[in-house]
Image (cartoon, rainbow over all chains, first blue to last red; front, side, top):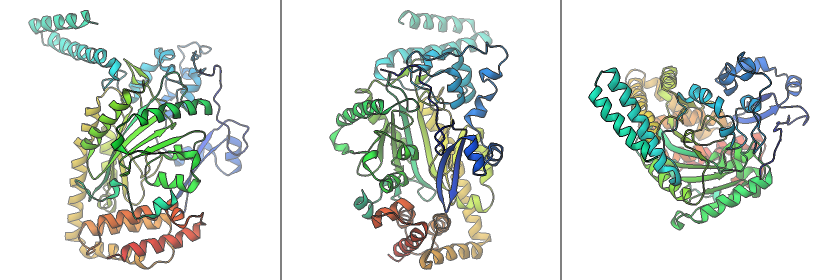
Length: 177
Length: 350
C-alpha cells in the first residue's frame, strides 16, 4: 500500500528544480504569504538565509534537532541511515524536515526517538488516553509506572515494609500482563 | 459558501459570551489523529489522500445525526471561500493551501470542526466562546470516543498517538486560549507574561496559531508538550496560569482608568472615530483600532456597542469575508475601501 523508496523532496515553488531551503513568510498590508524557495531563488529575491535567521530568531525544529543530529554525533556510524520499510522515509531526512513519513517510522526509528522526544516533551512515555482496543494495557502500564516511582521513594526513605507492599502490587499487576 | 458568509451569522465562538469573554475570545482544544498504514501528508499522493478522505467521510456519517455536520471538499471551493474558512478558524492555512482531496466538516454553530488530510490524517477541534476549556474538552472527549469506535487510530503503547510531527506525539492535544491583552501591551508588561508562559512550556503565538505573530494585542497561549502528560494535566497547566494573566490585565486596565483616564479615553475615542469615518482601512490598521475599541467596550467607555458587534467587525473586515460578501476577487485598495464601509456600518447599528 505504501510507496517504497520515495525521496520526499520539496521543490522550490519558483524554479521547481531545486530543493526548498528557505521558508519565507511575507507580510504586506496585513496579509501573510508563505513562500518555499531554494537558496538561489531566495537570494535572487534579495533574501539570504542568514538574514532570515537573524530576523526570525525563534525556536525551530531544526535548531532543536541540531545538537543530536546524526551528522554531528561522533559516536555513530555516519553511513547508518535507517529507512522505514513501509514508506521509505530515511532517518536523516526525518531529522532534517522534522516530519515522519508514516506511523511505522516510530517503530523503525525507535532506538533514536527517545532522546529526541525527551528533549522536546521532557518525556518519552505516553500517559494520556488510549484507543479502546489498548485502554486496559495502557492503564496497567501507567499504574506500574506510578508504583515504580512510589517504590523508589519508599526505598529512598528506608520505608522497607511499604516498599515490599508496593513490590507485591507490581508483581500482581505484571502477572496479569 | 459566499452566500452563507454574507449572512450576519457568526460562529458560536464569536458570540462574545461565556466566562471572562472580555479578555478570552475563545477556548480551543484540538486533537491530531492518524490512520495506520497510510503515509502522512509529507509522502501521501492523491490516492492516499482519497483513501483517508473516504475513511473519514464514512466515520463522520456514523456520528450522532444531531451534530448536523456540513462536509466540504476544499478542492470544490474557490480560493475566497477557502480563505473564509481560514478566517473562521474552521480550517488551517495549510489545509486551505494544500492539494488533492482535503475535507472539512463543521457543525452549524461552527464549534466543532474536523479536517481530513491536513498535516495529520485527521484533526478535530472544538472551539467555545470565552474561557470554557473544560466544556470544550468534554465535547471533544465524546466526539473522539465515537470516532475511535470506527477508525483505528495509529497508536503505540510507549509513544501514544502517532502524529506526523514529533511535536504532537502522545496525546496529539493542543489546548489554546485566544486572549485580548491590550493593557499588558500598552504598559509594556506583555513580555513578562510571555516569559512566564514559556517557562512553564506554554507557547505564545498570534491569531492564526503556529508561525503567526501576535497582531492588534491578540495572543494565543497553548501547550507545547503533548507527551508525558495526561490530557487533564495539559488542561490544568493552562488553567493554572490563565487566571494570573487575566487578573494582571484587569489590574492594569483599572490602573489606566485611574491614572491615565483621559489618555486612554482619547486613544479609544480616536480609534472609534477612525473606524466610524475612514474611507480606506488596511487589515492591520483595522485590527489595531478594533483592539482599542474592544478595550473601550470592556471598560464601558463606548455606550451601547457590544462585544458581539466588535467581534463581527473583526471577522467581516477580513479579506476573505470582504470578497465573499462581494462575490468576487478584489484588489487591495478595493478591499481597504470595502473594509472601511463594513466597519462603519456595523458601528452605526446602534
